[in-house]
Image: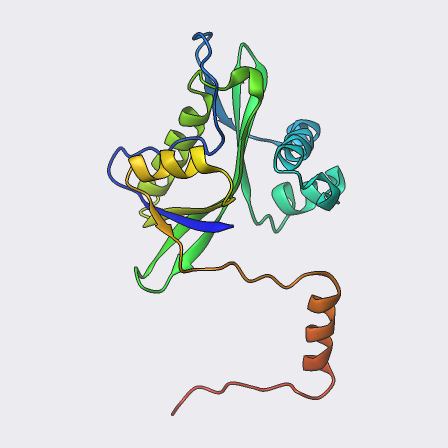
Length: 198
């Protein structure tokens, strides 16, 4: 997997990361913020994206988990939905992160997906244009995401729009047993307290 970074210019946009076959234009795309009523659609999109990436065996998300973390009292992410004629065609799930170098927050785009029948009609571009606008309006410094290294069409799209492909970075992940094991080491006597300097 290759990490990609896009610094948001005024009025900037970024492309949809999957190859998009040419399709004739259809109805205008409407972008809106998702609500808890959209949970079945969001979960369906997550599963469809996982299937495209050949990772469906890793999906353990449920509507209950998504409701807790997307729409609960302490929600940690946001979702945009793209619709044509009131039919959902795609989504973007994102959350804030922080750049110490910029000294400002940014957007991390976790998932972006457009159904095959809606690709090539501006649906993905509409989602990403709204995402870029959110970053600019909030005064945030960039939009960042990851792209699978075999997705050459996506990488080409990003490069043509000026995105920086950070080939010398690798994603590090702690999950499952490894996460629990490391957390247990902290609680079993290796705890360190960092105190501020006087």
